[in-house]
Length: 334
Image (cartoon, rainbow, N blue to C red; front, side, top):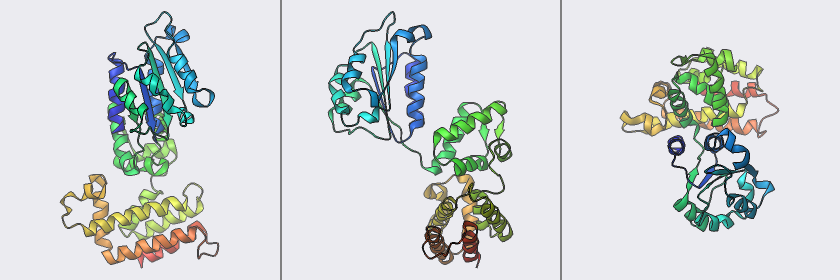
């Protein structure tokens, strides 16, 4: 898990176990930025940074430039720090760093932020860094993993959050951990440590409606609460910019696909794990499974696919997002 690995790297640095190279790569920039920022602000004292810390950008330098800077000796300090941001811009020549990685300057801390790409583990650079430094891969979390990430990040700072509140954040922000963390930090300024983040708090301070969102629509449909489902769809139609149809269709497709999987489970004792959901939300799938037999779920999934196609202009004569959702509800509830 990236969170645990990132914590280990930071704790090692705090304890003085500092490596000469940190190669931070992968699809999720949140951890890459977090580790690089920690090194930038903590390895050297403020007085040492003036002469011994530099930030380079991949688009502006070559591998030779990086090596030349890394081989310098620190001035009036035990170490120097060289941080290369946007190092992915050097992807065509990055392997040329292998010779330095095999014999890095022990008084230099070289940090490379290699976002959205990763090294080929079979090649020389990766093998060299594994011997002398740290390779950290920051993998993108799936959306169903983000609520647990939110809970653990907040727990580490002394806060708690309700499952519905975390689900609201994920629905609104997706799996962009940087955006999620920014909103969490705003909320932490409002409440005291030990207090709980609730849907009401999110609605009042972030602007996500606790009653009119995809999560509530999913539950209303699962419970066959026709009146509530149509009210939410009506709201979505009036606020289409903030509630794009593509997001609603994707969530409903995911929900009913899991309901179908729940129907197919012979042993439902470990259903939450099998469905890849929090045990807290398992009741929603049980209710939907009772309300919609497997055959009906199959028909609903087909209707959701048809709505998706119509939203892209296939077989629909300029229907609005609101009308497409209402049509989908008719298919679901009939």
